[in-house]
Image (cartoon, rainbow, N blue to C red; front, side, top):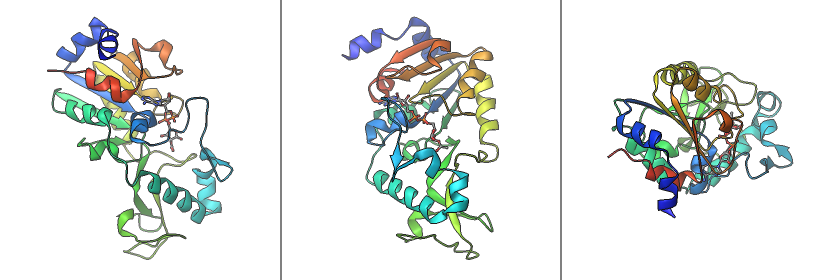
Length: 249
Ligand code: OAD
């Protein structure tokens, strides 16, 4: 099984894994799928919660209409995540960070599993589900310290309402996150795109930026995506099985 996958890797990728100095990895929900985190899309399905598509409950409009419902949705998702562990894909990515002169990990995931696997300086495009942020003073808190089960938690510092420190549909990305990711993509030689449906912008623009700047772009995904046709290489399969085979020894 492994030999078949390994032989599916091109000589160009094998050589880049040996020689590249500057590597960017972009991950999406699929990198956490083998840890048990449900993806939003893929396999012909879209996540629905209490009759609402995820992009309705996870939206700026819902934050204004019903902040408690937004908290309930993220409490539910944190409940799903609480006992989950990083998988071999997260571990492989963490092992790469010290093997290339320059390495950037950009994730759309909010689950914190890259950090749990040991990845440092992760560029989080969509925030982190384990953090809350105050509407009034902007202070960030670890949700695990808030000790609330329902309703809307309050800021320890000013008493204002807290919100999940994640990017909702209709909101801007955290200041500087896209700029840092785009700068890394602009300068990399190898860009690995792992477990993303590549439909949510601006994250989906990063492989395009990398390719336009001359990088070799590789997609790892069991399904084809809108990016597949413009990649230099597509490795079809699960991240947890394929990434450990992409080694720089
Ligand atoms: P999606 O759920 O849209 O896509 C998941 C991708 O992972 C699909 O292309 C699957 O084929 C692939 N996949 C599934 N299992 C896999 C595995 N074991 N190994 C590798 N790939 C696998 O997730 P994202 O692209 O991350 O944004 O979604 C982007 C954004 O849409 C999310 O960050 C979130 C969502 O709305 C916000 O909440 C702002």
